[in-house]
Image (cartoon, rainbow, N blue to C red; front, side):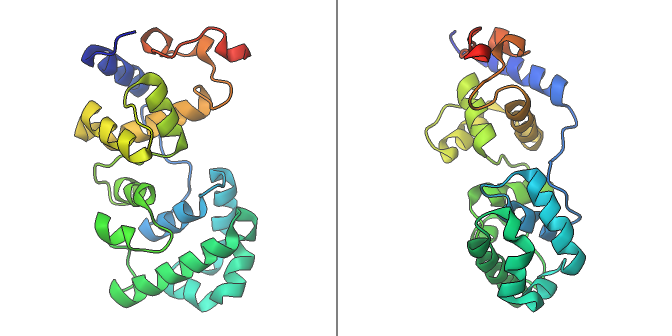
Length: 215
């Protein structure tokens, strides 16, 4: 299948129809809680993160309160989230910076976010998009996989895919499309066994393989 602008537009139209109104799976009440949740989500399911943050935020839901917990108690609170020692160090260091430089608030600035320990480009994009409602596309494993399979954006790195998606998708749909691609990756275009035979995008997908579901 030769990719064209029309095919990309059809792909996006189908995704929007199916996943309109899709929201993040992570639970949070403000940009700070979102930031901590996304840091915790590295190599961990959103379901597990929500269990961890529900417990953590009952005890400490501000940078100051998390700093007051200290390293040992914070490690105990997030132990079931995977890589907890490194995450605890990053979270404490981030909270320290937030208190010292930003009055305890999460900065609404992409470059500033990336200076925080444990925050890379993907996390900064999530906070900008979901936390502050700015147009942004965060490329996680689902977005990376689905974008390449659809050839909506082709790249060997998350940055390449992000740049491709920025060109392929109208800016006013960036943040919504991020969620469409995530949910499609979770529900249909799975990593090991994509459900190609039942995929609503099969007719406009260059990677469509009828045998993939049973592979």
